[in-house]
Amino acid sequence: MLARLFGDRQAVKSAARNGMWLMLEKLVRMVGGLFVGLAVARYLAPAQFGLMNTILSVYGLAAILCSLGLESVLVRFLVRYPIRTPRLIATAIQMRAFVAVLIGVFATGFAAFGWVPIPVPFVLGMSCVLFASSGLTIRQWFESKVNISIVVGSELVAFFGMSSLKVLGIYYRLPLSWFVGLALVEALIALLSYGGAYFKQFPFYRFSGSAKVARLLWRRSWPLFLSAAAVTIFMRIDQVMIQFFSGNQVAGIYAAATRISEIAYFIPVVILSSVLPGFTKLRRSNYSGYLRKLTLIFSGVSLMGYGFCVTVFFFSEQIVHALYGAAYLEAADILVVHIWAFIAVGLGTIGQVFILNDDCASTALVKECIAVAINIGLNLVLIPSYGGLGAAVATFVSYLFTGFVGNWFFPKLRPLFWAQVRGVCLLGILPVIKSTGIRRFFV
Image 1: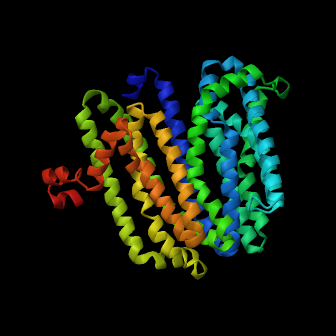
Image 2 (image 1 turned 30 degrees about the vertical axis):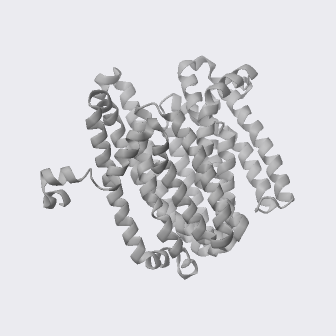
Image 3 (image 1 turned 180 degrees about the vertical axis):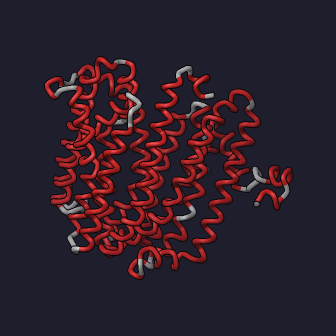
């Protein structure tokens, strides 16, 4: 069927194979990372675990700034102009390396003056890794060739290798710097493998950038850069602000709570990837049916979220103690608040169906920027007085705005908002129960 739609059976097979590799990587990372992460958290204790998560959050923010939103733009150019591959890749790497140097200089200066809550040696190491990670741009060449298996295979080998070294670090009781270093260099280890495959085909002497190509790439990528930056700041700034205002101990407790609640965030992403193609077709043929189906999905995600929230409300202490141990029991109260963000995240993630099909990307970007401002403002007010619990409240409110309530303020997104309202009230499920019977529905 897909082959008839796209007219190229081989292309469909390659795309499906790429999708399977990417899903495998996410699944392995999620399961393996969960168990190894719990072991590391128990070993480091809240204070050092908090500092490690702050370092990785700052690195994540810096990495997004260095990416410049080039990934998807570069893939499109590589597909259209394969003969220009060396020039495109070299230009993108040099652009990212230049930004990495700027960030490294400023971050080191800020750390030296105490304006960044991270010791200077960690900032220097992070800056070096950030500069070297500009080479990860080579990954886009493999994506353009629809041959991601080499990259994913290399990354999984690096993941298992680094995870094994983390376990050894726990066994030999190595310091925090060991675990931070492994987390930062993991992607670079994979780069050594698939980077070799790239330079075997395009020798290093052809590595030459172009200012003209750089301007062209930036003109196409800056909207994507702003969107990615807004989302990343939105997701990571709370960890950094907690460490700045409340210290490592509170940051570690907060990180433990958020890691538990964020385990479930992959569920809406899986649902989105499954339903998006069908909704795209339904949007063109039956708009009212399209909104009804959206309401049904929203109802399902909301019902699932209510189940998570009720379970966590009654068993938060037992969950935290079982996963992290007694040292992290303060995370239970934070978890009770933070888990409610799952409903807002689910509504927002599934809402991407509407945003993509109704060309509302620019409106969504404005909404995300407002949500970032709300998140930072609430964190500034709440964290000094309430610590991690205040950050959890700020996260929930800002997620609620960007995923749900904020849609009311934009006329183009009002149909999405009312579909979400019906979903939150579980009205999308009622017709299904009426037609199938309550017993058959739940069985």
